Length: 89
Image 1 (cartoon, rainbow, N blue to C red):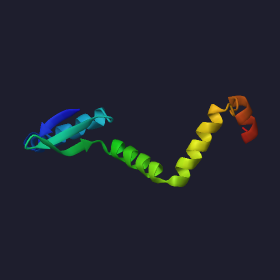
Image 2 (image 1 turned 180 degrees about the vertical axis):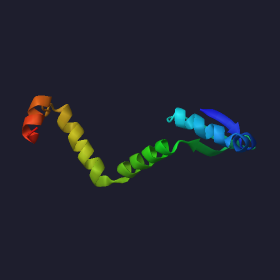
Image 3 (image 1 turned 60 degrees about the vertical axis):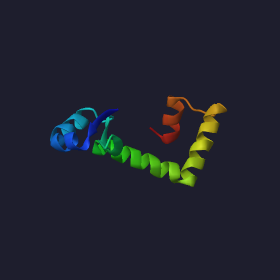
């Protein structure tokens, strides 16, 4: 993770914004007095993290995910052709 002090980040904010759009999974650590103070990231990455946290915090969604993973581990899967057939595609 790249690190910039708060003064550098303020001076380079527009450039950093363009860089993060080109590398959407990158996060820039902004420091104040040599300690992490802020994280700069693309909006897409922020939304992805927020959505992931929402799912992880949803007990019903997590239980469904665990049931699905257990079913796959037990071999309860369908071929692509069978899934398409069941969906009428």
